[in-house]
Length: 152
Ligand SMILES: [Zn+2]
Image (cartoon, rainbow, N blue to C red; front, side, top):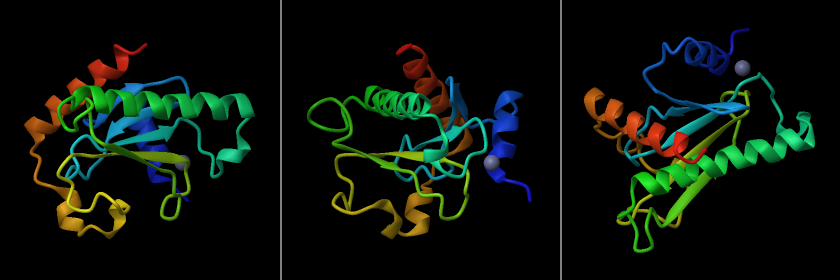
């Protein structure tokens, strides 16, 4: 059975994915299709693994480092979202309920978020999707890429 995230990894390797932000040692970072919460990124493990615990412990630590690096980039790209230089919250979600290839949603919860105390999944789908157009998506991809590459 084909895995949609393995397919996306293949597109990222070939740079044929317009959502592609950055290649990290263990993962690819892409801009999420939902942009109602601007800057929502998805970090996809390069290899198909269903469980984080299948990875060697050193790799697990490095993957967590990559997740944190994405969060830092999001905070750098939206410095005025919160009072202390970035979105007041970053949500980290590794669910696997729908796609069983280890991936992380790294989701900024900006100041003014209508439901900051709850997980995003209760927010209406249309609100999560947002209204960002292609030109704006490409610009945000470039900004996030600059912030991630600049943190190397
Ligand atoms: Zn996969």
